[in-house]
Amino acid sequence: MGEIHRQETPENMRNQYDKSKIIEFLSERPFQSHACKKIGLSKATFYRWVKDNPEFRKEVEKALQYGRSNMCDVAEAMLMKRTTEGDMNAIRFVLKNLDPRYMDKRSVYVEPPNTYMEN
Image (tube, rainbow, N blue to C red; front, side, top):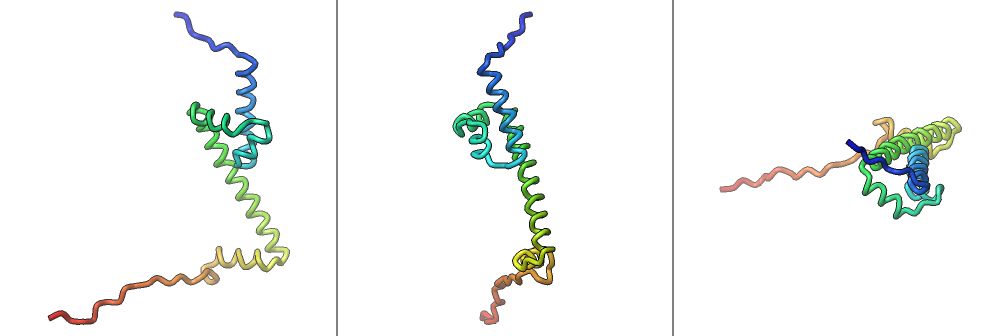
């Protein structure tokens, strides 16, 4: 029987282009506001697309995860660079977070046992 074909209007084509550009930007930098501003899209439109389109929402979530991973890689590379350059703040950070010998000691309060004998 007859299938319903959605007509590709210039608006639909523009939306598809904007969606693909948003995904591309989020994969590089995981900041929705930045991505929207970069392509001239309102945040309200972006959030409406995420709400109304489960497939787009999945793509956004995947792109955000990938973008965050990329940002962590960049941050770690910069930290290691600063460490090898002798930056004492970077050295302290690495030691306190990667080596148990330099980590802050955390004390845990333990309730003392009741030493009074009940009659």
